[in-house]
Image (cartoon, rainbow, N blue to C red; front, side, top):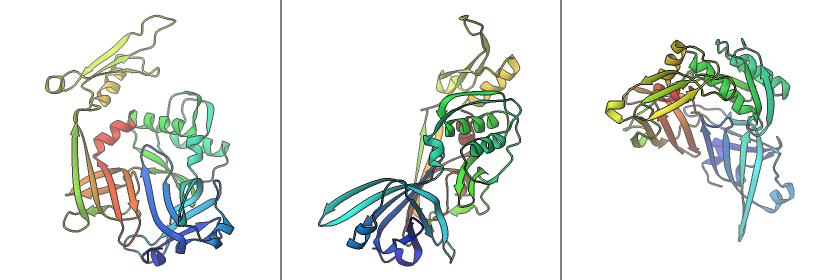
Length: 331
């Protein structure tokens, strides 16, 4: 195994087998689009390891010394082996995909009828209780939600719908995150340490992308109509049509019943040029999707991150400003 893994990172299988000497590489990936942290781990297969074996469903965790720290911490735990792929060319190698256990909320479907007046936090506690998932710290989202009828769909889709409604009603942005203490609900940008990214220190490359893909310059908000009648138009909200042309989105939400609410909802969906930033640099191995960082004195949210662990390792961050991320959360 690469020498730099010996003292900085650790892979443990079934809470029993320490695989650091067999580990060739570790990549950790996190995204706001997904609920579970993912690790891709390459291992060399020795005769002793072949006797142990590895299979989907087994527990696995990744630990490491955090950037600027001195002692090991859990980076992905609790984790589950999801997929194994092997190849033999002289020496046998195996590549393992590991997810934290929030993956079960993305792969498990159910149906729910939820009353009005609950918060997204209370609903998360309900889902966790029903599926016997341990909870850690769950922040209070503080916004009462409308009645929800969730037909057969992944639990994560329901959680995301609850969080998006919270934002659409003026609440803060949150995301679920699995930790050693259980499933937690964390506020986006609530990380206690905000890392500063600087071109002359820890950044190798900065790429910027500006696009009208996904832009919305006009929103038609529709109401509900009885039977097969045509839905009434409650509001048409216009933004930067003169500058970018008409890019219309039709929005229908059964919870909106008046023109004032329709106008407010439509305004939140207007969005012009989409600007994202990709940063490649030295690895800061504890940065997660949803964290806040600073680049050139501007605050950004991390929308996705890829850690190629090592010493010092390498990371790739996708960054966006608050307005863009809030639009994503507004649905």
